[in-house]
Amino acid sequence: MGWRLLEDGAASGPWNMGLDEALLRSAAKDGIATLRFYDWDGPWLSLGYAQRRIDEDRLEAWREAGVGFVRRTTGGRAVLHGNDLTYSLAAPESALRPGLRNSYDQVATALLAAIRELGAQAATRVPERRHSGESKAFDCFAAPAGDEIVIGAEKLIGSAQRRMRGALLQHGSIRVAPDEARIHEATGIDPEVSVTLRDAGIEVAPDALRKALLRAFTEVLGAPIEPGAAFPEEIAQAQERVESHCLDPLSAPRTRRV
Image 1 (cartoon, rainbow, N blue to C red):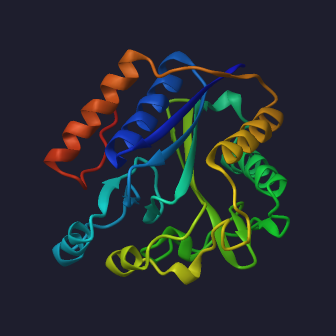
Image 2 (cartoon, rainbow, N blue to C red):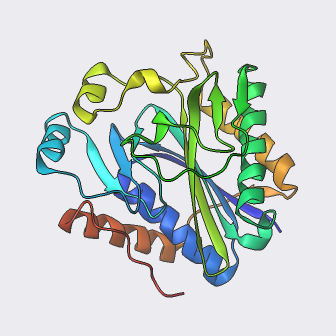
């Protein structure tokens, strides 16, 4: 199976999440496999699908600091975006190794290979471990999970996955550089619990990071990945997500019939 590559620039949280959701629907409906890389247009928090409602005082602190917020269709805890690169894969389940564990392992293999190619030789994968209950931490990066990428004890890449009607979406944040202290203060995200590539002494141009990831995914997926573009229907679905975000920024994404 061939893959479509989408390389997007900086966009808002609702658009980024909306397009990922549209790609998942395309995978479920039409069997289209897509690898996507994208950035965020300033500081954004993406909240897990089931993360509890946020109190108004915290929301106001985010607004005053200029931090946007959006709810993901995947689970997990809050992720601070802005100085990261986000990857996503949306594909029929058959395009990856069967089962949740095996697909996570396959993606982690590609992520680790790319990061090490760029010089992060100390990066490793968290070994598989028994699930001990959902983390109570607000921040996704506060506690590494199985198959996530760390340097020492600190998380470098955090990922989440959702499956729907024979298809899956996995996306994740690759920490490239530290965020501003005022953003951490406003969001309550502790900069000491995670690590960035820059913290590890690796200065990498955005294009070089994307190319390293593309090479690694091409090898691990064992299939061609060709540049493409989002279809008009996918763009329309992403725009619907932007419009619904204006009505309720923290509403859970609706699952469209396919």
